[in-house]
Length: 304
Image (cartoon, rainbow, N blue to C red; front, side, top):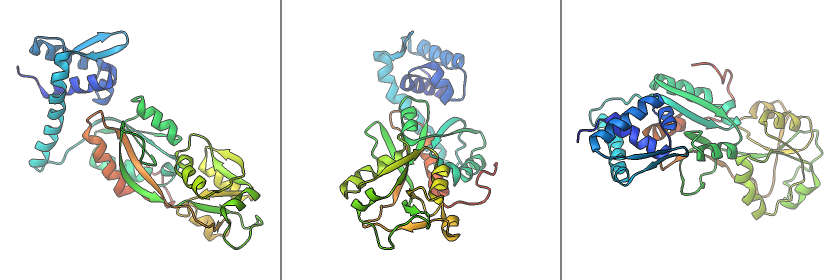
């Protein structure tokens, strides 16, 4: 038996993703090309490796025996390139989900870096609420998401990209005491928060409950820009990033509201499924670590 790498690659992605179309998308190919590679591989093996049905693909007994070897072939190609000292050029479509804060700060730098190092990679960014993107990742609609939190269960693997501070802020016009507020006192003031589906809310939920914060939520939005604008206009207290809102703090449009205790930094992680071998994920996570910067910069969306 003399299978090609492309045949083994097609087997691995078709079996793990459950369809020829999903494998074609991941490999930047066509459904007919993937189907032909599988058919040619089945001819080499002399047996069916995948069962086709209206509900998708299932792996035969022989296919299950070959699948770990196909995964090893993917890893071996990467090790061979590394041993030869050759820079690996990633290609194909890669669907990346990020939160709004990333989109407003360092997404542009990440896109430029990826374009410079891997010009054949077709990056498709998506900006959405964290939990919505996690569901898309679970359904194979995204290849990776970068969002707050790292405990998403055994299905996913996480790589910490960076941290961001989120402190209480308010307009100086809002009547607040100069001393630190106690957790129970937050019930006496209006609090503006991000909408349900925000991974930031989930990240801080346990901490708020642990310390007895009584939050009097009067407004929620899925837009960080709207949240900041409403806070500047004195509608309530918000939990915002001083790195991003540094210009407003320096101009006196916002002030940091001290609490006892203060919220801890929030960890951002690159999260991806661990049941699909794709070395691009770890490489892109490493580049995300290098470019992560939550400060607001001019021309953050400059094209690569």
